[in-house]
Image (cartoon, rainbow, N blue to C red; front, side):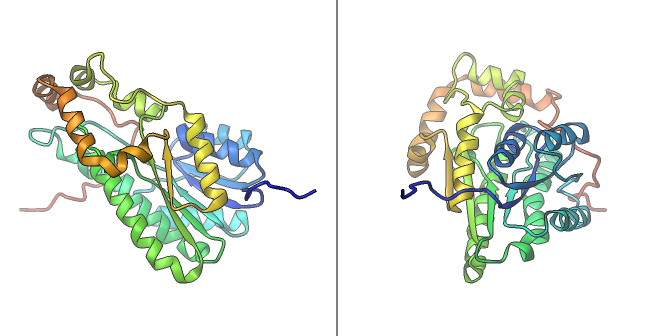
Length: 292
């Protein structure tokens, strides 16, 4: 009997960053269940060890993706344990509110270090292993690359940068047969979303209004699995993100109208509200500091 089953992730060698929890952890569990060989890296060793055990005692390492030398060492070690590499999921990311005027500029610096430089460093370290006809790089951007929320400038900038890196890498890898995908998600029900929107400033600007509501993580992970199996160019979740992206200017106007007069009050709160990043970050040198 002829089989109509589509491409499978079974047998694929997959490296996932930011795999301790959230989408990264759920994706690791799903891919392992489907027969993929996964390796994990992230910042939370105890959680990573738990996820790795649930995936069948797969290899994992602590790694700060904003540390280029550390990324190079860890990626090389994990690729060696996998026996090669077919897929990189550059999932590690952080978020934190920041008022553009009067806010803390280090929020932007740290966000770009993890969300943009971290992606670039990981791709650079894994690139030679992925430059083959079955290779695939999946970068995690966001609907925030198209529609920007107040106080989310640092995260939105990083999402837009990742989308640009993805388009560039796609062109550069074309001759090798490897492919590149970029995901655009919105309001997925993970720790990142809960913590990012759980601030006093965020509640002030949104009050009882949710622009989109939160969406379960399951369909997002299923979309990622399909994208990996088919090496897709674009991944969206929830489904309506595909409709919003072509009409981003109109969507931006809707966002501005919904926020109304509450925005100024929320910005004042954000300037002094002390909130952590959505994932605790290790101490790093300040890249933007220069001696006078």
